[in-house]
Length: 408
Image (cartoon, rainbow, N blue to C red; front, side, top):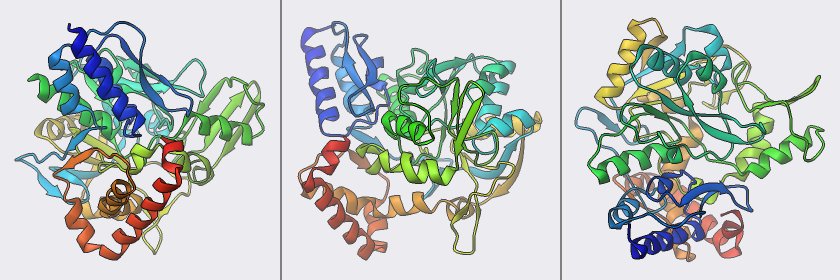
């Protein structure tokens, strides 16, 4: 440990946070035992120093290489085809858990929950780091999954700040971590910076992390008194797509997915998520997302039904895992193409094709943005030049108005 190194790490962390580039992934807590993640005044997870620093020069170098608020590199695996919208792909499927309870509780087909339950029960991995509701179910905490019951308790999306990469076991190569794309990227890059093996990385399609305050506002909009700690709260699942639901005593209130995500949670995502190059989990071994049914315009239809996931194997390790899970009867699958996956993910398509314009507008207005390497963003922008220019202008105006800083 070096006092100088700890001070340099603090300066880098502060730069990422104050610029609005922090995603709250928690990777920095792996580099210094004196850092922990906590909600800030805006309701986002941010690192803070709680004990004297333990970082050395290797930790500073690792932070520069792995913090997704500084650098994110696209993954180009030699065995995979790189799709400009979906990233590295070895194989894609429409998939669902064969366990009906896991499928019902999951946000779509229950695929990641089923993989977690199977992998831990069979010894494929020693444990899985995941997330579930905290003692106050309005908040989300990282947990260790070692049984089917724990996988079931963690099933379903949590549209709130969580920091999987900060969990003490998140870097353990004998285990697996289920995390947002930024967390998978951070853990993959951290393993590379350390010359170590990464854990099995499972991720999901992500539209961003909303402020915890948005959850509170949504709960109160459903008639629950401010400050009341519910008995239970889930964002999705228990159906597909499922309803945002709050249970207090004998009372239960809910909102549709469109009302909850579209009306309250989605607009409250942090700035770093609005400049993200990877909402589809490129750095993972396996990625899952909603395989929506679409209307005639290609937009998702949110009618309640049995859930289905789009499942993507990105690495040989991920492909082997899925194939053996299918052989064991854990998943039911049907091969599909990357084009079919992205056809029902219009928001992910638009975000990637206009991101170069958003980044250009932000930088022109004086905002700091991370460095993104290998995603082909300029090529996508040239194909959609008019839309990219419009995005650049809109972002420039928002940054100059101060809206970005207030939401950082």
